[in-house]
Image (tube, rainbow, N blue to C red; front, side, top):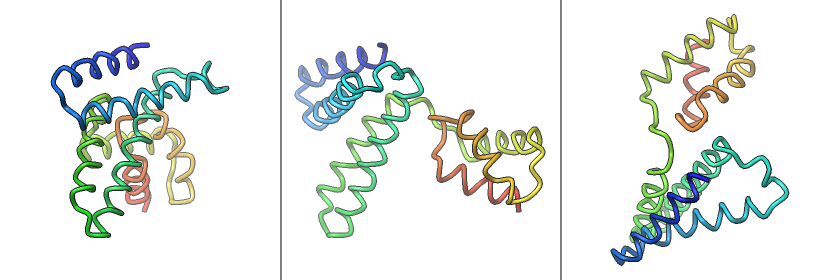
Length: 148
């Protein structure tokens, strides 16, 4: 797999550079890959599943950073955010809000959605087309805004 090879190469480079945060971040990604590969879902582990896994890891770190920041543990929050940024390097380039909104408007036109009641239909299409390129929460907010 391409992602797994990139992670292994990144781990080697981080070891040589003695970059502890990068090394821990990449080891966490490798551990997640190994968990998926040894699970029952190993057959379904394709590029889309890799992107979802990476997004989940980033989201976990951002949420943990918020908790740490709320408990006045800024040094731990900064570390979590640094790990999230390192993991994001392996995700596809994120679209800008304007690009997402443009794509959503075309999806709304194609699907014939006219009101907020059709949000589920639009979200289904948008989730597939924008997987890995935009945050699901942001997509939902923009779809709701467009359909109102």
